[in-house]
Image (cartoon, rainbow, N blue to C red):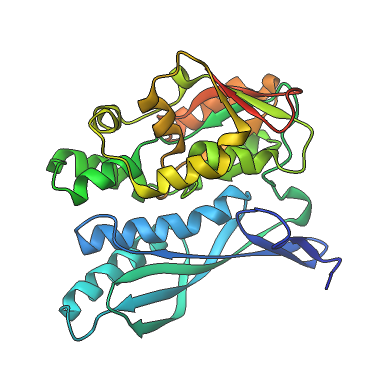
Length: 313
């Protein structure tokens, strides 16, 4: 069934569904939840909420309302843990100016938390993930390595300083990055989450006639993730990402394995990957740095050929 008011739906790998209500207003809808990625329940709530809100920001929109999605073992875990999770999520929603209007919970052996989010955008201002043009610069706004570091946390191999550093990055809203890109004007955007940088970059190339060239030396990465990747702290999702998309990626022969791993590392509440014209790239980068997004960096460009492929040096 088709609908002329449906701007993005399930037909391709977009970050959120978008439906036109009036000539000037479209709603953005998304939902995301997952198991704890950090031990502190309040921090987990913050990260999960930021992650769910990110899909709206990736489309250039403004999130307005949210509903909690909760799974919790009520007979096996103290209810205070759930209260802290929900408090963390609520504080992050307040930071984003989002109104919590309800939710749903189920008794589940493993705790999970996230949000169903509704936002708005002008129908003609939607930023899709497949609009990159040859010559566009690629900007990434947060460092990679959250999956690798989270694996080390679960193994008890990450110190408190690293846990704090990781949590702060994951809990950081992509709102400022969204506002900067919308003020400058960009061609395409997606947020980097479970499929990793290269997995989501591949999604940006589907059904297009362009490719990408990425310079791995310019990609922002947590330095600790490099050390941990070399030590073998590789999440299972990284292997799945690589197996699914390796046919679309050409690595330089000099590419070290640890860097290839990091580029496929599944991220939680990662940054935005933005395609912006070369003439606007420097202005956008300045706006990001001045707007509280210090890790933002130009990591490559959109190229005319080979179409549908990513070359990484």
